[in-house]
Length: 302
Image (tube, rainbow, N blue to C red; front, side):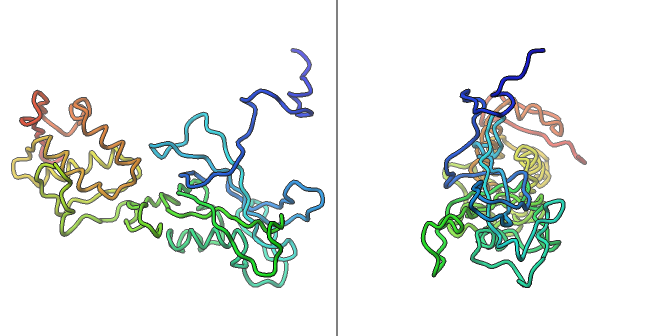
């Protein structure tokens, strides 16, 4: 084996793009929070004091709400106050009180971030005082200007802008059905909660007539599994367990009309594919010879 070069040992910078780290500012982007923990940091500046921060790697998501395999992380920090009051716990999941301050100051960057998350997620994810629920959170983020009267503008200790969550996609296993309303609040229910009972949504333009009253969007976080579940629900409601695929397509579109665009794109691709219909293991017979005569026959008891 050869001797490691100065670049390989980290003594000097690599000039190869594959070795570069993500940089620049994210704005108006869907991301996943990873490696979330509290740390002590000094802005990587020798003349700055260390302070407690929430750290997270933000990974931009693609149209399927997944992180591309080659996607690089954007490291971000939200200041939570001063080390005279708070220090990270040994595992980085909590802030340990070491001073007289009774709580996190709401105008800190961390306070601003959490004020954008908790009203959307609910307090139950954070009652243990840890930041663990933020790990794996998927959300639409934007930058917010934070006014701090009396502090000099552009002071590096108190940045003017902070990343906040405008729309919440998922957190701690809870998936939100609607992340597109203007206020950013999730109006859907948590995974496994009935949301479709009662009056069915208005029919989409061009959709075949179908009754979806009482059909529930299961919201498991798996668009294909949810689509399969909804098709089963619709067929269970048919006396002869038989329905036109064209009608099922329109009905499913109604049930999922409040899903995020990425989910709807996945479902639309599946539901238009004859191959997807023919692989359904609960169907005894499927004809895909002509759209208007397509039928799925549901197997009773499954």
